[in-house]
Length: 385
Image 1 (cartoon, rainbow, N blue to C red):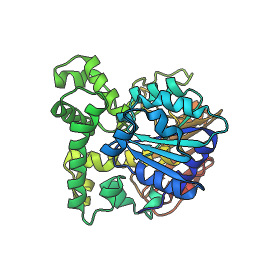
Image 2 (tube, rainbow, N blue to C red):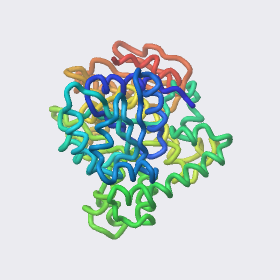
Image 3 (cartoon, rainbow, N blue to C red):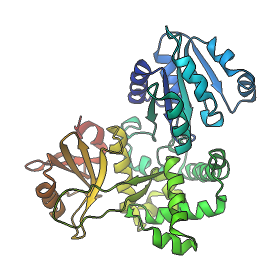
Image 4 (tube, rainbow, N blue to C red):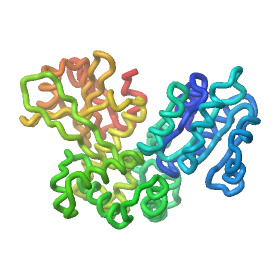
């Protein structure tokens, strides 16, 4: 088991602030393991209920209020998406004074799940999105993490082919079981085809019309498919920043598959040799670094954007915190440099700093307010707290 101490601290901070905390993320990303680590770090008793276990499900079937009201300490409820009707019960229990228990609920994210919990638990629930294994959690083994992705079972597999088999099975289960459980009624073969097409589009600006023509459906249909996968936390829509400048700027989002291992499985990439030779190699690397930065800095949707003009200037990631803006370029090169895009962004967006994330061994200063940061030292050297 890989210790995930940064995540444990973040969840514990939320448990200290809210009576209910939800850890949201795709199946098998490590939510249950993280909950165990959180429980071990806190004093007092822990109760665990897994809503995929028939016995636990039956316990809560008749009178969930009676069962949960008797529990003290930390109460962990896994697979909460199977019983969204529990949220009103949790609201009543969260308002007890003094508070005898806090609740840690785990589940696959969906717009419907979040809306239901927010309506019932407004002001009482804190959310924590759990992504794949971070680079500093895997000993900065960047290539292995890049090829296999961040799902613990894929990363820890004894060989690449076993990791690929696990990832392929994950994709099938996600499409055939997980999405239907979240209320999605799109046939699995159609969604697999769409997901694979998104893999070939990874790192590019979304164009509904091209996807709609390929599928022979309306633009609104492919947009709904995209939102479904985004809500289930397997796709990221990185929104553009619309700065108040006298230039035409891109207004559509970029799309990324959030896990590089899933991306490579859908594209048929099974080893580093194939990955390095693949046309999507650079975009895949960009996606890995992007997810590592967004997850490592715990960036909200309102803090992470990309920026591009129709004149060709572009930043892969633009971080906004308060009035401070930091621009990031991601390059799979060992010889990073200050590009024309960086110079344009520095002038037009008034950046506090620009950073070039690269594949070399060292981090160093490139120019005034411009740094080069090595990928394998990303968490240590990013320094944007």
